[in-house]
Length: 415
Image 1 (cartoon, rainbow, N blue to C red):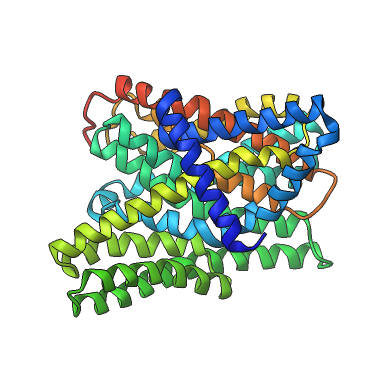
Image 2: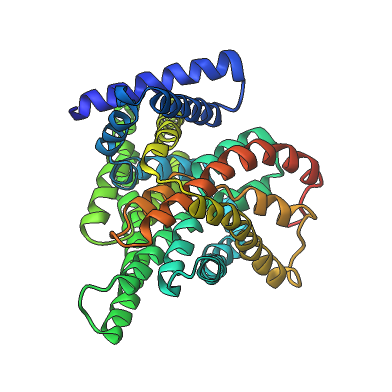
């Protein structure tokens, strides 16, 4: 199948599954599409088991392999999704919460990676470095899922900003940590000292380079938009910034996710305030909300179909179930430690730790990173475990975090 046929199939299925969910299940849009896709996948597997001569499961596996989920997300959809998410987070709100966001996206990511890595190595006997790679890929929260849930929760603005900002930045930081650990766990012939030096250099280059490129490219596009009053052209400029900047960052070996977040924050705040007319603001906002919704639907559809790429066996499933608790413990550590560090200097609402812990949904980026791992004896186990955690996170946590947030987040935060 060519790219047009694949894209058409995904859009048709996302629309059809979305309609089924809307008419019958009435779950939140993306989660409903994921559930319908999982049910459809289970139906195909059941039918294949009953009538193996049809070869339906093999056909689906070939189709799913042809989709190349990892490449589609990491090199295509992720930049647009992160840019769209950052576009609706205001710098003024984020700056008021910068200390929490920075600590959770740095120290929190490191703590979560360590907790999962050491715990998973103990559970499975996996080499520690490889287990730390798993910790890094399962640590990022999915801004797509998180921001979608936030729209239903009606949280205090400060708490919403903390969750949104942290989910956007820990995505980029987690990806960089993953790249560094993959280089250490799967070295390409270099010595350990050389690998460590390369890892430190890679972290600085990816993180700082991505942030600088995002700010600079966003500022340049903003300067052009100030001189234009044509909503169609300005929408096109933002699309070019998201796509072109992401590709440029990738080619320069900078962090493309961090670039997309920084550029989106600048355009969403400074750009909309000083570089757009009211009409243009409305069109830009509507365009990116639509892009977000469409890609969100397609992404969750693809996650549902990735069940055909996962090899389930008893040991892997048991490891996955145990790893759910491990991932939640790691998330609690990543949230609680920064909050407790800052508590002497500022006040938090009582619900901030449980809400941010349970609201740290995992999503497509973890599955994509697991799929992109170098081939090894541990890759099938990591992929199966990652998939189990992601499905639990999206369905169970995703369907319960909004009621939890409404109940615990009613008191307004003081800071």
